[in-house]
Image 1 (tube, rainbow, N blue to C red):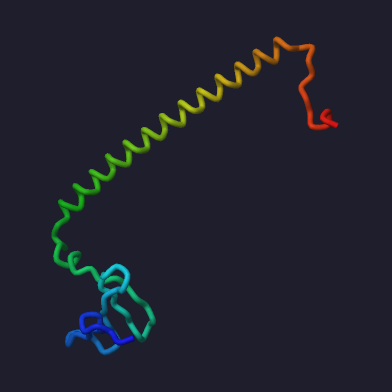
Image 2 (image 1 turned 90 degrees about the horizontal axis):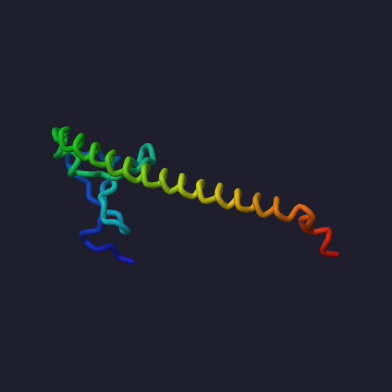
Amino acid sequence: MPLAEDAAPAVSEAMPNHLFTFPCPCCNKMIEVDTRSGKARAVRAEESKQAGALDDLLASQKQDQRRLDDIFRTAKGSVARSADELDAKLQRAKEEAKKDKDEKPRTPFDLD
């Protein structure tokens, strides 16, 4: 199957002969392959351009932290509510068991 011209591996003059960059066929990200070591990595040009954007990174990290804290707090409350519901069900079952002291609980061996 012939490759399209834009999908062909590209070698830059600045790159050594053992480094090849080409687009991923699935996600169209640029992939850099080192033929000497056999390692591949995704090349992100936008990261090198934004090397000085530490304030933006910090702000996004704080926003993610607030979002994750909110999700954790919601999940913690949900677990606490379900634990309270299970405790209430257990207490009701204990009360019903106290009312029926004469009746033995059924076991799988009694079914024969």
